[in-house]
Length: 279
Image 1: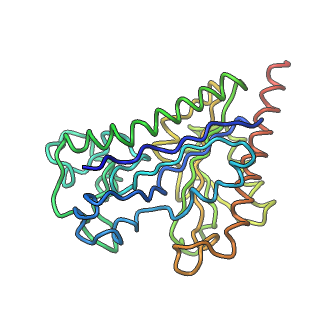
Image 2: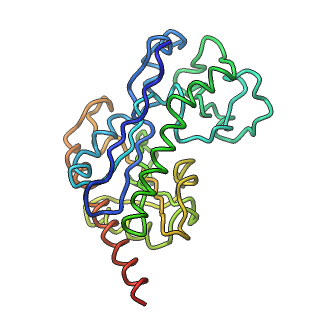
Image 3: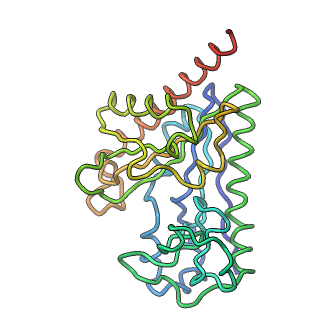
């Protein structure tokens, strides 16, 4: 079978200690995956964070690094731990911890969605899961670890921005939600500064409710080493057209916000690092 595509890796090349992670925008669907799906590609593509990878273009132009999944989330979810397995999707894995996400059908191989029901014609075996992990999931996390280490070696600190989008949320949830794993993945100033930057750019923003962060932020953060991680969820209406699949009138505004967010957080991190070193 055609292997899953490895991630795109854009090493940092500027003066900011910031790395972007985009785990859910992969669109390289091998034919065998589509044929396994009960609802075809349309059902699988509903799991994507549409075009979030393209929102990163201005930040990347500024020299901010990025690791971008090309394999679709439907094949393997790079924002899940390897043992977050739904036993209805992967045979012989009933001993794995059944997290709330896996129980809800969104484990490391998603099993179902509210709109499309169960996604697959049949379960896969442990060997097939290992192949997907080796081809896409493990390279993604190795790339994140490598690029963060490059930033720490150069700047003495690093900030990981894990970039996602959300379907139109219920009333009361702002269009941008940051998550710092409720204070575990970043020092408090990071989330507070991010929300201020959002407000300065004309967006309402929240912190940790209803999205506090996932596997990427949990795994790659280490605030004690000055490696902070912040998840960002963006309302799709803020950058897509009414179909929620193509760029809309707010697309460039959101790309500009992503650039400003990376630049200001990166500059603040460097300033704080310098002040600490000078004491």
